[in-house]
Image 1 (tube, rainbow, N blue to C red):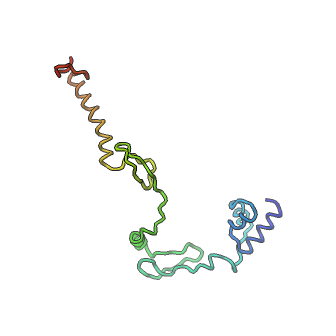
Image 2 (cartoon, helix red, strand yellow):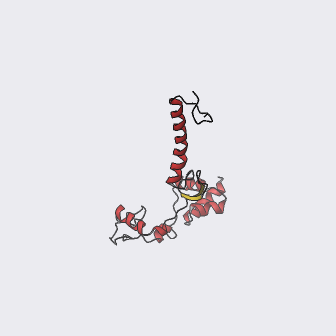
Image 3 (cartoon, rainbow, N blue to C red):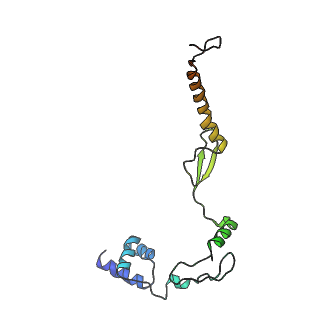
Amino acid sequence: MNIKQKENVTKMRTAGMTYKEIADASSLSVNTVKSYCLRNDLHPSKSRDRQSMIEPLTYCKQCGTELNQIKGGRAKQFCSSTCRSIWWKNHQDQINRKAYYKCQCACCGKTFTSYGNSHRKYCCHECYIQDHFHSEIVLISEKNCLAIGLSQSVNTDGKGEG
């Protein structure tokens, strides 16, 4: 950063602009602006401070119990983890889920959707069992044939050689 950029960042930050706004206006990276502001103890003016404009939630979303907010920290939305889990369980439509993957079953070839696991191979437990243990049964039966002295080839009369 040159001297002119530093002066502009100082003016914009004291005027109340965010790191991103300053970075976009001055063609600098957000991390450069943030580092400079933190090193030089630059804070936005109270007139445009976004945190002071947001009124913190004072009641639990689930049970309505009054919340004790800690100044300077993140605003609490729930009084306890129990209330939080109950509320999210009842409001699953508001969960922002982004980790959906389209996969193809290795056993039946069916296309299915998997949440959170992009490497899933099977669409259901039955396909997993079929694919894994069907091939093992063949191997076990071949081992049993060798163990009792039969070779893999079979005579025309149905008896094993050996």
